[in-house]
Length: 226
Image: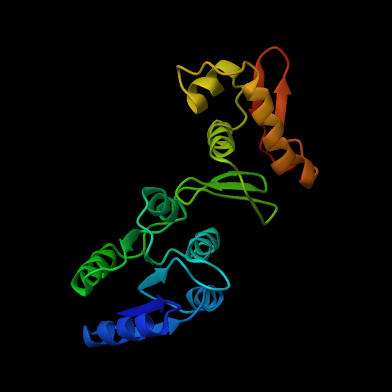
């Protein structure tokens, strides 16, 4: 089994390489995010051990880019951060597991074995609408081949529109699905967020996929000519 370890601390990188090699793995290492990304994209590994705090490009970004480029090698993230928000961020970027430093080496081995048993996951279902693609698993949105950064609510609204492509959706349906039954904020929230989405996935690319249906709501029209 072939592993990639991406860790900037020389001592930790050496310890991981030696320990994993003694456990029977073939180990290659990278000292920064850019090098790790290049190796992960161009070489075939069974799993990647990826530190979060890296120079050049942090582990969160390495993970996000790999998933956006359809590299599904299992990723175990390592970090000194133990906040729940950081763990969630790593998983949302597409990591398969998360281990907080300091850790027992036996636990690291156990987690790697668990990832290897699962193998490379099947490619998640990706929603598409013309040149727009949305991956619910990695929360990556691409438009015209470019990465589009969305807030959590923008992502949820776009996912709802794309999952019901070409259907007219009322404002009430969108509020219920994206903001919840008990939402009591400002009444034009849907129109505001539709504008945000148009500014990110329509206007910069000269398209009009998100259409207003007067008196009814909105729909996302998907077709070769829209």
